[in-house]
Every structure is written in C-alpha cells, then in structure tokens.
Amino acid sequence: MRLQSVVFLLLGFLATMSVRNQAIAGGWEPIKNINDPHVIDIANYAVTEHDKQAGLNLKLEKVISGETKVVDGIIYCLNITASDGSASNKYNLAVLEKLEQHFRNLTSFVPLQN
Image 1 (tube, rainbow, N blue to C red):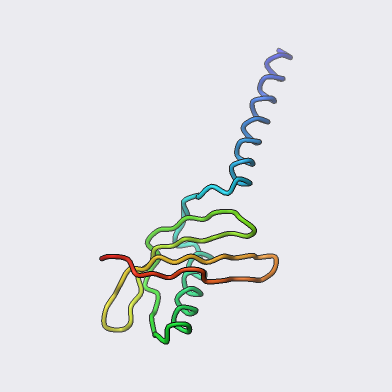
Image 2 (cartoon, rainbow, N blue to C red):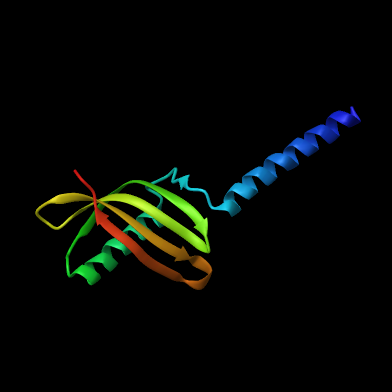
C-alpha cells in the first residue's frame, strides 16, 4: 500500500514538472476562449495602435483564433477580422504584454489572404 502511494506521488510530481517545464520553455498554446474579455482587449489594442501607425480607421469585428507564448511576458498571436466601414478583412497580429509592468507593444499587424 505504501509503495503505491509513493508511486502515485512520484507520477503526480513528474506530471506537474512536465507542465511547468512546457510553460517555462515557452511553447505556443492555443487560446481556448477567444471571446475572453482580455483577449478582446488585446485585439482592440492592436487595431487601435495599427490605426494610429497607419493612419487608418479599422474597427475590430471579431477574434477568429489565437495562440499565446510565454517569453519575458506573453506574446498574443491573433487572427481577427476588422472593417474599415466598407470592407471586412482578415488580419494576423502579435502583441507582447507584460502585465506586471503595465506594458503592451504591437509587434506585427498584417493582412491575411481572404
């Protein structure tokens, strides 16, 4: 009985370390809830920043899909649709966020083929 307990504890520890090491290694993880308010906020930030930089007036329509990667902060890579009032287009964007420093930076915003 005692050996089983030790084995279960050891297996639990190894599983926890595996998950922890994957997070530290910074592998891309799919965003499970693309309608999460924080994800929508990141997408709106990206569209607003892109509008400022490019002199455009895009409006976010929706987040289609996305992934995150842990680095020195979190990189959000999102596929979105946005409209300029007359046409809706798909875009891929990347935002680096460091919550503890209240920092966000748009690193990429490119149109996708429809």
